[in-house]
Image 1 (cartoon, rainbow, N blue to C red):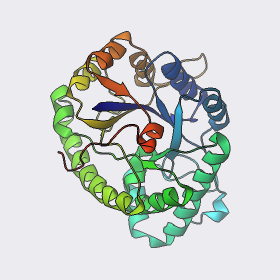
Image 2: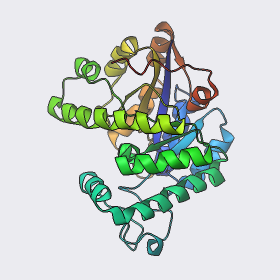
Image 3: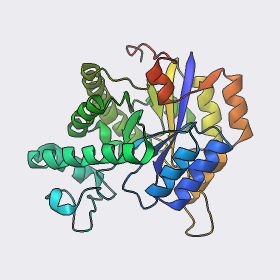
Length: 292
């Protein structure tokens, strides 16, 4: 069986992001979202989540290009006085790996984000990370442990089939190859960590290599190529609501997610829309993870 989780990242980042996710859910195929509990519009996002129980809202952990939940004095060396994490993901990733003094602060902040999500939304079925930092070895270990402790059943596995993406879009092949190599290694390790903690995941993901560059032709070409099992396709939709216009790519994703052609293609391809909540319940069986 082919099943797809269509997720909106950065929920709570802004009013525009919230509006885009809400429209894509109510009028389109968005089945899931990932909440930034430290985002400027997180309270509004939590209200939307409570008013739309069919939208499965997970946690979008932020440790780079965002703000902490805890105060700076509790996160010595991790954030600045304005609670801002580092902005460069490569430097942040290297620092988190090699500076072991930061592990305790990272664990405290991740715990605080999990607890904040549960207060805001009331449930938590999946965790992923802003810029996919949840796959970072240090963060993966922390989050897998917290998921087991708080009985969060699923983490996102960032495992994108490179050849499928390259067949659909030949842009930036060098960048995509490097990303694929990095996340292939990280996802292999992550699967082992999740197995030790009894956690579940999607089998495949799309959105990594085409982040901000998704088009209708790409998606319509992707659907017939989806593999058996559970695929997550993640987006970053945002709607122009008359304040600060979001990037054109984010606005385009709202239109893609509400496209009648996309709905028709999913139906014609026998692809079932699902959520991490249904995956956790056993309603959707995962594929054999030995497949490549």
